[in-house]
Image (cartoon, rainbow, N blue to C red; front, side, top):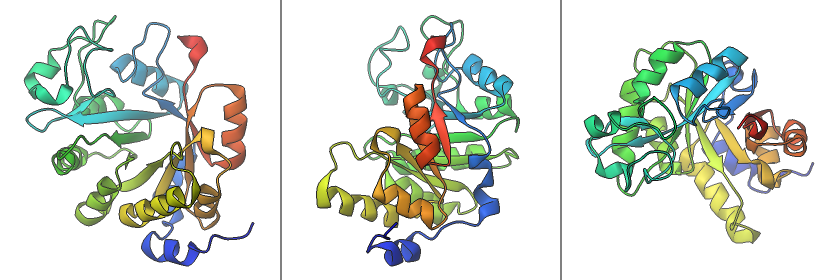
Length: 256
């Protein structure tokens, strides 16, 4: 494959990591928001326990409460997955911890609760979902929660500032850049992806499976940067992921 003209710049600003630092990322698939379905809600304790039982890794989302605690929840608003409504970021940590997940006897978990539940039994991908100006607050909350955790864990985000923050303030934490090419085609999109890569300085990429094969992704993979792909939901996307990436982040719709 002909290398990108940006390859030298990529290698300088976002060098490939040491293999031993990131080997855990490609040792097993990751269950997207836990192994949910069949009565288990996404990003719940039950979904994470099911992923552990399957011998798979866990991907989860974190957001910041109004007072800066890291909570495991995907949506910006509470409406879809709880009986409450409105933005998660408007609620305090104490209020969020009391909210029941829809169709479940569980409440919304804090990140530290999930780390205690996993206890090193499965690798964890923590997607840091920044909202507006709360990025630094959430990154700090995640870093503090990870302090002393002995299991395998990595952070990742669409926001390149998250990778930058961890590179500067917690360089031992493995960090990834989440990428989609949706709405980012042509030379403009290609340049924006490189700018994000250089800013984030990631150890790995988590790439939209709908965009594979991708020249940008392939170039990073060729020079030794692990490539995960999301969200694999069927046999076709799994075949694509296993051909063009190193490991998959998956859901099982048939289990829902």
